[in-house]
Image 1 (cartoon, one colour):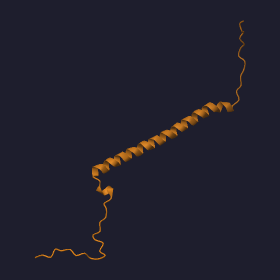
Image 2 (image 1 turned 45 degrees about the vertical axis):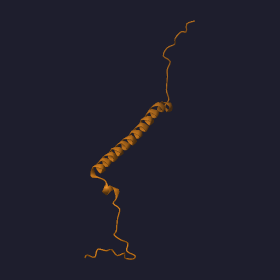
Image 3 (image 1 turned 135 degrees about the horizontal axis):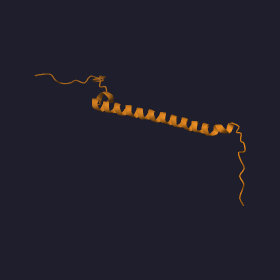
Image 4 (image 1 turned 90 degrees about the vertical axis):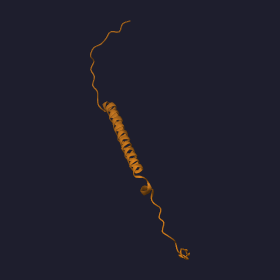
Amino acid sequence: MSNDTLVAVPNDPGPAITPTPPSIAAPAARRRARTLVDSLAAFFISLGGIGIILSILAILLFLVKEVAPLFFWRRGSRLDSLPLSR
């Protein structure tokens, strides 16, 4: 006869059970897909940020081009007179 009975020991925390982090528990294929999606998202976010900066610079250049002539003197001369018909 074998003695397979368990005896409860007071103040025994039991076996140490540590939860497995989700990154380790996830299958490798899902992890690769998530990494690919994250990389694509980072690329498109960066591309959008660069696009916004370039569009703001284009607006600034347009405004400078349109406003710059206001700061320079223009000289005009009379070319010819046209008679007004009655």
